Image: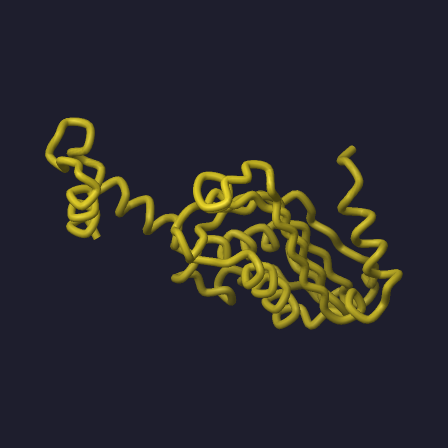
Length: 184
């Protein structure tokens, strides 16, 4: 990857040997490997033993305001924002820290926000087999802010509703109202 970055710098009209750029190819390669590290995460290993049988828990569980960062697959520019996740347990719960880790795993891939939202929801549906899953992502895309249409404050909101969140309007409304409220 280092050689590709050096070639890219030359194509941009830069000199990869100039003082400020001498280590840039290595830094960019390391950065790209980190930013796309989600491709190499095994979800089953990530979740590990953090699934718990709990037949008495059947109320909505929400983890909101999860920071999400990803790279747009069309321009390799960042998009970032907040992800809100909910599920309705059906005899099984997951360790709360695993939900942001799942968000991070799918975010650390080349993405489009629509697919990212769906992947998170489908993953939790598959792992937990709950009565429903809801995911909402609100993000700012630098590919829209820095180039193209150049709209710096345009946010994109996507949602994926599965199970009761899709079929029951009151469940969906409860989730949406809870994530709209401020913390504390």
